[in-house]
Image (cartoon, rainbow, N blue to C red; front, side, top):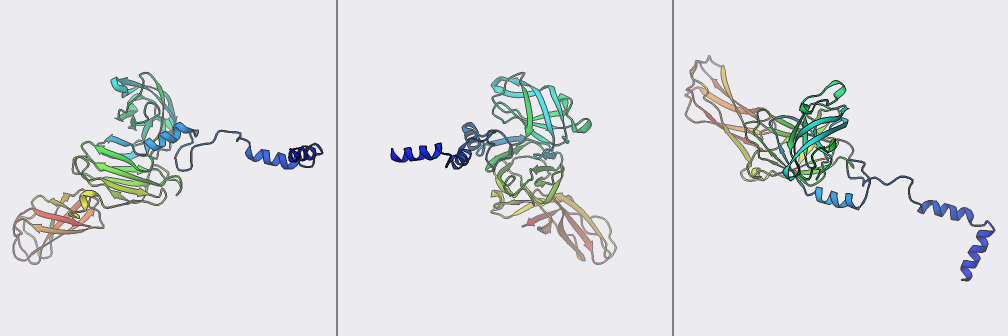
Length: 338
């Protein structure tokens, strides 16, 4: 009681008013609501629902059906909003109209529809002036999501890729596929992802970090194909320099190689020192790997052969003549070693 009286007297005399004012400013609430924590890639308002959502999402599995080309998770676009058509179960079956065309988008941008359970995925397949997305036909739904409402106008936002998410890729590839992960700083864009490449087709799926301009930087990694999640691959990016394997893909652990068989090579006359060649698609092969090639049947004396990874996912086998000769036509089995 005596202490309170003394403090009150000093305050009334103006002796501690300045100190009290300084202390008050330290504990006063901020003028604006706090954003979410540093380790996210958005600026939504922080609250308990956000915290729970981040915990759930960090363990979410994101299914994506692809055919090939670029899937850019680091879009530079903004302002796009779409009206959605929803079927039973809250699944988005299509885009009814574009409410706002936005700017800065690029073909290949892979975006999420904000709403529902934040799991519907839209792919930009065409753009208009200034990188706008003016038509519903410019968007393709890659994953229908859950929990959406028919007729809702939804913001179309950058993919919320967070650490520990699992991405399960399906579909029949008609060309190589490249996923571009968001770039930024070591604190804001680092991520670990589990990727299940359940696609079919003799093409590769690779992951790179964005160069900030809808392109890639670094060497990237190739995600090996499997089925029923048999080739789960953990990758990591620091968000600045590159993407790396965080561990050997499950399907590469034993045996630690990839295989393939060429079409028939040979059957035509070769001059001394001349060669003929053939190729085979080998998913997971990179130019840093070694190749062992073996003919299914002996091509003849004076003939030698060798193989190498001529580009990601492709092995070239060369069959050469030490003297003028005709190598017997045969297929070649190749084994690509890490």
